[in-house]
Amino acid sequence: MTRPEGAPPGPAGVFGAPIETRTAAPNSVAPVAAPAPAEAPARSRAVPRSVAPKASSDNTVSRRDLWGRKQRFEARKVRRLVRHVDPWSVLKLSLIFFFCLWIMFLIAAVIVWSVAESSGTVGKIESFVSDLGLTDWKLDGKVIFRQFGLVGLVLMFAMTAAATITSIVFNLVSDIIGGVWITVIEEETSRPVSG
Image 1 (cartoon, one colour):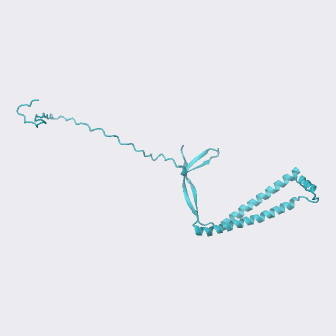
Image 2 (cartoon, rainbow, N blue to C red):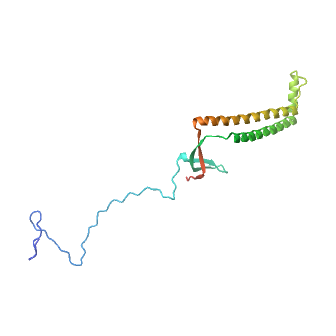
Image 3 (cartoon, one colour):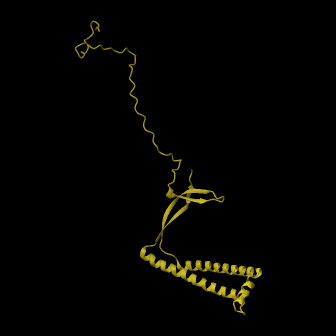
């Protein structure tokens, strides 16, 4: 490597040999080395807002539609505390419920008696009992219906009183233990679960 005449001496190399230096020509651009490619940042695994995350099993409720197909819904489960039950509302509800039950059993008794009398079952029962030795024993439909209705009426009032007393006892016990926790599902927030 030769140095042109009149050029200032360049810096010395490792072993005292001069290092050749070059100057860039005017209006020229010195090449710039591209930086080493950095590793691409890891893609974030964030779920877009438009896609709802899958509901866990404890937040889903399933029910069948009109055609019997099972559907799963995502809904919010909420815990509620039952502290007090109004005895007056329990009295009204149980009175109407047991009255409807009494009427239903009376209608069922009339239907069963008419079917048994028309099919001859009542006559067969009377002849069987007369063969056992009771000669004047007869099945009277009016007496049976009257006794059945009276017993049902007494049971209706007894069950209504029992339900009302149970609500009063619940209120007394609830003041001691703090109530009963129940878990309910809010159907207003339910939406179908995909998949």
